[in-house]
Amino acid sequence: QPDDTEVVVIIRPALGFGSGHHPTTRLALLGLQQLDLDACDVLDLGTGSGILAIAAVKLGARRAMGIDRDPDALASARESVTANHVSPRVDLREGSVSQLPSTVGVVVANLTGTVLTGLAPVIMTLVDAGGHLVLSGIPAEEEAAVADVYRRGARLVWRAVEDEWVGMVWRRGQRT
Image 1: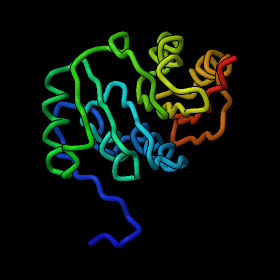
Image 2 (image 1 turned 90 degrees about the vertical axis):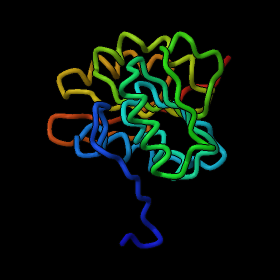
Image 3 (image 1 turned 90 degrees about the horizontal axis):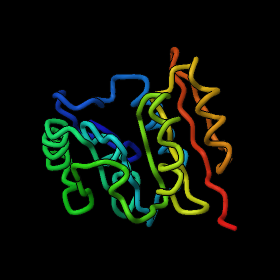
Image 4 (image 1 turned 30 degrees about the vertical axis):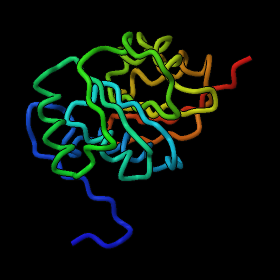
């Protein structure tokens, strides 16, 4: 039985990545916990099971949107959203990052380092100036490449390592 200070997210292991047992998911969850999410909108790129979008609203975010290209992952995410009683605050969509017109206060992306590097120009445009990027899924050997592209428009504010995986939180610079 959890105490009043714990945030519990129920996830049934299924096809979508993100049961909470993998170090990259734990690092993304730790990254979200570094931020004040109150009254914030969160975008979860590659939502998988929906665990990060669900956790964001349970940690105080106003709303979260999870986007994924895999319909099976989204079906799993919908089950998780319902099981966690957050349906009114979590919007799940099939699609890609190029289909997202507006910005949010926090973007969380538990993807590979290569994908995070390749999508960096697009991902950076999705977060508000002064907002945060929570990045995970980064193998230690890809950390430098990821950091090189994100430091062009953001400042590293948190970093953690578990096994050979790296998680980071970046704060996006102000628009000029």
